[in-house]
Figure 1 (tube, helix red, strand yellow):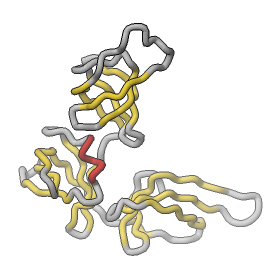
Figure 2 (figure 1 turned 120 degrees about the vertical axis):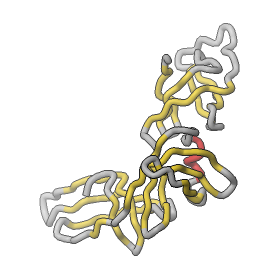
Figure 3 (figure 1 turned 30 degrees about the horizontal axis):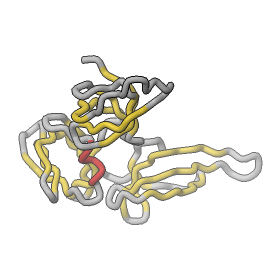
Length: 181
């Protein structure tokens, strides 16, 4: 059971987000898992003994290009056969800040339903709104809030200007570094 693996538990597919192998001095070894439901987005923690069996979920990933979003769905085009399809926004509202028109993502399908859009761990976005740093505001580690091209607001160092590209950690929604293009 590795991080990123899909398991079938409680009649639904779960993504393993964290895994810790524990081998206590007494008793049998076990694995502590942090799981995210691919259908509801909820997280849960499970402890599984090494002699317990776990079923792997039969999910399929599809490579697709993001086209646009409307009020209910994200619209994609399969990069292999150019088929267009929609992925419901419900349960994936947080993905909107990382989907960029024309970029390719993996779409997870389970039992004929699209249940997840896999976003890269780090993504580069352009700063669309940023106030200039004030003269004399030189406190070490000073930050300001900027708005990125997708509407996401993040705290960045004060030297970041409008039009610059920044790398963002998509799991924490935090600034990583400025990107020179």
